[in-house]
Length: 153
Image (cartoon, rainbow, N blue to C red; front, side, top):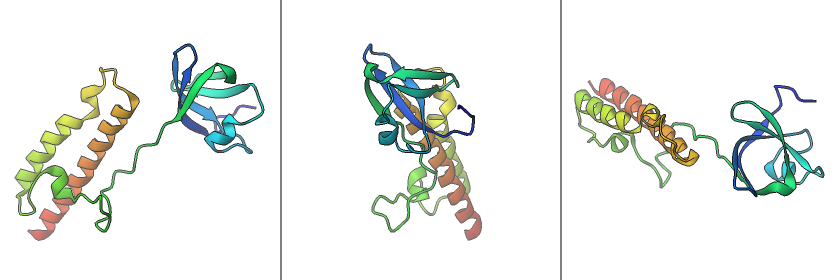
């Protein structure tokens, strides 16, 4: 039976009628992957919407299902990784900058990427995730720059 401790797989479900549902498909003990849940030998999928409503979706009414990737942990990439962007570059300041310069750069970027700026706008979910992820990375970069400036002083 349904219990609140059950795990879900975050998805976006496109129905044949064009409706899009966002939420989670319920995992079971035997089906813990998206492929496992979708290939279960049942005509319905148990779905929990973003607002917590429990629904059952008829499989033959689904056009496609897309997994929704969770937000990445807000840490800067390892310096040995080719995708590395250091904290100073993330903020757009030079390594010899003052604390005030770093703070001004941080505030400029934080205002630009703050999720509250986009709360009233109906953006696609991937854009919302991008804005939130960038805001977290900017916060992480500023924390790192601030500690480096304080250590150097």
